Image (tube, rainbow, N blue to C red; front, side, top):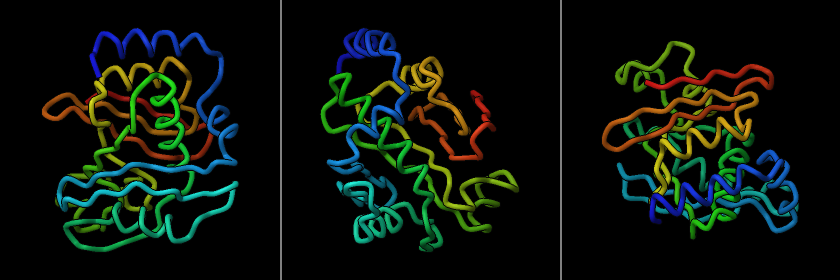
Length: 184
């Protein structure tokens, strides 16, 4: 998507006084789904993990498998609130005109050993299956990060933006009321 068009569309979307989780709840009857790609393993997944407000166990287990610690090849449960937040981002991007937003997953669940090797925090939310490092294909990460801050999307999350190649974001689901935002 053209960066200028995306910025204009997101600016228009900012005028809508609706927080993303509320917008997603209106679509709960049709299901919540994600398009995920894991560059390290080459895996691709387009899956519904909730239907009519109920967990789709098959879809959810596929998400957990893709978001595993690839280095240790160890799977863990992934926090449903984190997935719902990602679905909210997906829904907002669709509303802004992005076709099939795809989350490029750099890291999600980590074992203690992998977390230590990558220099992760001792109390990292990755260890609990509550964090993801990602970028969205064809969407400028810096714009997405700024937009999420402006729409007050960040209630009860940890959100970090990292410039570089590729640009990527950290997102975690923490206790509601506890929010941390940073750029690294």
